Amino acid sequence: MSKNYCPRCGSLALSSHDGNQYCCEQCDFELFRNAAAAVGVVLVHQQHILLVKRSKAPKAGMWDLPGGFVNPGETAEQALFRECQEELAFELNCPLRYLGAWPNLYAYKALEYPTLDIFYTVTLASRPNLTADKTEVQDITWVSTAQCGALDMAFTSGGQAIAAYLKRPQ
Ligand SMILES: [Zn+2]
Image 1 (cartoon, rainbow, N blue to C red):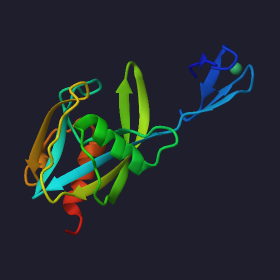
Image 2 (cartoon, rainbow, N blue to C red):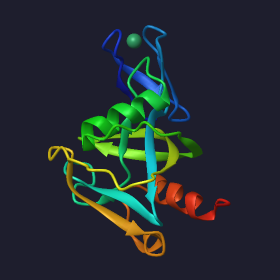
Image 3 (cartoon, protein in one colour):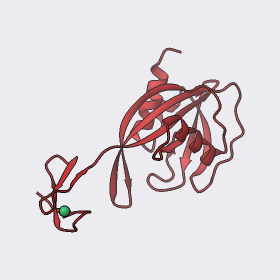
Image 4 (cartoon, rainbow, N blue to C red):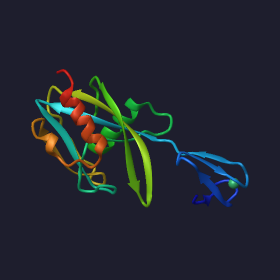
């Protein structure tokens, strides 16, 4: 079994049987590798879904749904409001409908973070004015619901959220 350095005592004595729970043979420290929470939104206007093209790694240049990681202490809804504001200067002040949550792997700088991505959908009465924060989003597009099934998305969870939106009773 491969050993890792213990974050408490520094010994090369941290190991795991299942990849989720790690124990240190030297100091008895236990480390749990849990999924990080993230949020995303299927924003819909007249049979079109908003997609954002990622500026940053991982998956730079690929299409994604607006969203991001949940900060400690935030509700999922607060995280989504904040992310829409940060990425798109968009005030998400309409009712959210829960779509579902899917696990994902977020590979960043040689570490793979397991996440649980929580998705909502919002139906907009008008197409909003959006201003992309270019450090996060290099492009924005509205894709017709007929075409979005064929898109190669940055993360499988985003594709699953769109599929769930398309399958749900309208
Ligand atoms: Zn230790």
